Image (cartoon, rainbow, N blue to C red; front, side, top):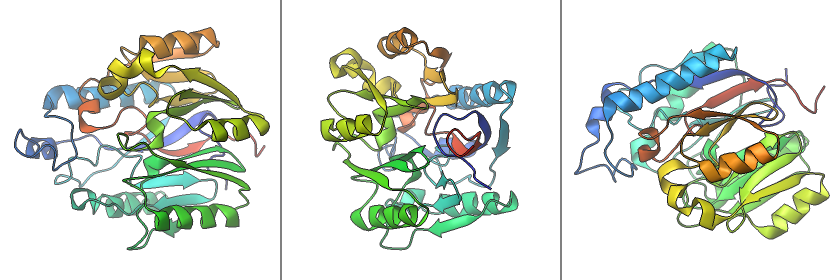
Length: 292
């Protein structure tokens, strides 16, 4: 079985976590230790996740809820503990102690769904799922920075090469950013949207040579929303149908100018933990775009 070959094939199945009492751990004294940008309104945070789950269900997406993470405030960011490639799941290895252990719970949940585990990152291989994107059956992007080290990136590349990927682009993640899914997103089979001043021009040129269109948004147009909204941290429900955080007017305008159907989702509390729609959605399977 091939689980996905892009970020845009019709979304069929995801894995998510509805946060509970673990959010009570985060307070004014320790929120930075737990990798949050600030404290959160717990009930609003939960509501934003539940509302997003309802959107997915209304769109026909199967949502698997992960339990047993009551001591892990970051576990709601389900993209990070694992990453699906066409042949199965890669299990992450976190840099920070406060996140270690999440990956084991997600791994067991994937196994219960009979999802094959094709790779578990080892002790020296630091890798988080949010720092890579499968955008075609032979093309992937991977970030190297604070949350992925050289060994983790090399292990990821080696695995993809064994799976037939011929175009794997390593992108240096800016020091102010966590993952590449904060400044690049796929919106249909052959189009990416990026923040112009953050996405490397040489990679953009190579992607264009491979047949991709690159739509750009100016950093100056989104800078005030970059940390508070994470406006490119989107999820495609299908080609040209995108979930976007509320308040991202500049990005919404560009998407709509490119004939993209935009559904806005409130993420005001979720972003305070360092992630948005893409981060809280552990994608499992999509309709195939290229491997038909």
